[in-house]
Image 1 (cartoon, rainbow, N blue to C red):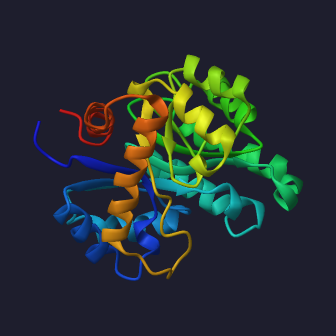
Image 2 (tube, one colour):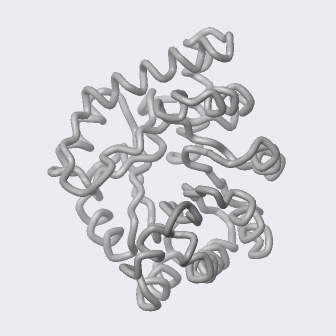
Amino acid sequence: MSGPALFDMHCHLDFAPDAQAAARALAARGMGAFSVTVTPRGYARAAELLAPCDAVRVGLGLHPWWIADGSCDERDVALFEHLAADERFIGEVGLDFAGDRAAARDAQVAAFERVARACAGGGKVLSIHAVRAAGEVLDVLERAGAQAGNACIFHWFSGTSDELQRALRAGCFCSVNPRMLAAKRGRAYAQAVPAERLLLETDAPSEAGEPYDPAAEAARLAALLETLAELRRTPVDALAARIAETSRALLFPA
């Protein structure tokens, strides 16, 4: 099948100083991307900006950090619900109960419940943020019926081993980045995820306006593949082909 051969399945191209140039540079390197957003209004801007970029899919986002600090309110949740009816790609969404954000647990869960219900019709690809909240994320998805018929991707999974197994039993995918492999537990998780559920990501840029070097990010993904193949004791070409096939099916279904 033609098309990109390497995919960044969780990045923030709209944070780059020139998102279109970044997307074009990735495409020139044979890369596709799932560029997630953090607010519905940000999604609307990013979707328009990146519309000419065929190798990029833009996710409709409602990030838990923006719920926790009050940057996103009822109007944003309602806008998400409105837009989600017509959008296939969703992200970044989820829950984060680390540190001070735990104080906004109820507000986060209420918003994510509505996100999940808006996605319950199926046919969507979700990139999910879950920090100290993987079990609650799975509970919400299950209650809303948002696992059935959707592809749920845990971005940078950091929950417990039991939660990982629960996510895998539910059919979820996991996107792995280089920082995840810096920790012993992250390396163990990268080995435990079946090859057909394994995806690559950079999570870059990490904030608005941060410099973004497409060549460097492509090199990071290539190095990540090498490390994963070594960890999993599998030929890198075979692993690369498997991950690319999965990514392509999610972003560019036939």
